[in-house]
Length: 289
Image 1 (tube, rainbow, N blue to C red):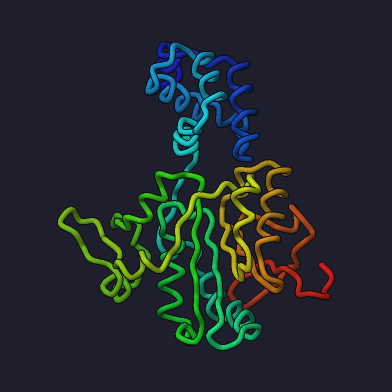
Image 2 (spheres, one colour; image 1 turned 60 degrees about the vertical axis):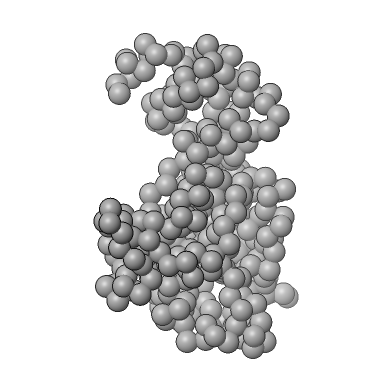
């Protein structure tokens, strides 16, 4: 729908946009630049009409003062972008099973717990990719108790992740043997992941900007936080990075997207360059950051 058509439905003024942008930023840490204006306006108009509000002003008042936050969650779901597929940026999964986990395992007793956190989970392709990589390519998988945690602020994608049904495009990078082993092709030409893999991932809703959400995550050995911080401004990135730092074990690793740099956000982490990937590490006790 073109901008003119949207304007006939509802008018989101410049002042409205700024009010909403500041409110959404305070709640989520996500900052919308002016170049996202059409994207934001259209989704705001959709929610105004879906709720039956008379105009932006009445909608915004109700949004700010709602007790349970249900409409805010609806907004978060439509304002966040979820584009992913299995084995995306697989070189980091290679690094996980060849280098990062080797160092993590050395600091654990045999049978000890290793915790991997994938955020954002989106529709589940990343955490399930991690599970498949561990099962197929990490020889010590049976020697440790591995927990895969996966979180997102968007409840709709979390529900999709827990259903575990994917399009042909989403599984296009998977080797045929893995596809046959971990998926069942359905009559509608989509692919359902096995119940064992669904059960292997613990999904939860988390807002990285909310300490009440993040403080329950502790003793994390590896974090995958790829292509999320690009939606934050400098302050929100630093808050998120510090929350993940606090959640991690000393010596733990964090992987960002290929266009992201932790060094530009905070000096808490050190850079580690492995054969397959460059990642960031929380210093071991006694080491200087």
